[in-house]
Length: 148
Image 1 (cartoon, rainbow, N blue to C red):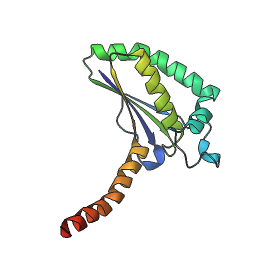
Image 2: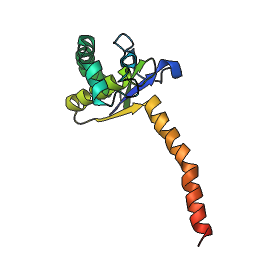
Image 3: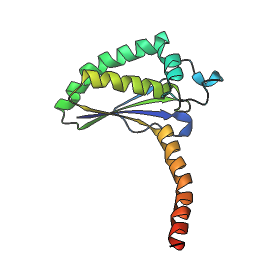
């Protein structure tokens, strides 16, 4: 079985299709800390800010416990992929940090399963960055061919 942990931002559209969708906007938002605003939940300062909250620790403990009961039952139903979607306002800080931490716990709890993490908003930003660079690279390649 494959377990996919997805982060997303509610302001950027509907939650992705998932077996479990959870809103983590109840956690304190690093966005309001000027130094953390440009960072993401993949960065250590944001991870610390989010994961050091008692509510975040309680959430991760409860989710891990619940999933330790649910995922084996889903396996019995011949489900091949179990998706967990975690959302916050923009999908940059809280949901990303919680998704990363949950994925690590699930890798430990289910070592025989493939556990993947996807960040809808962050991954789409990196895709856009690559697209922004693509025309320049194409121009360089074309210019190189023209001079040959």
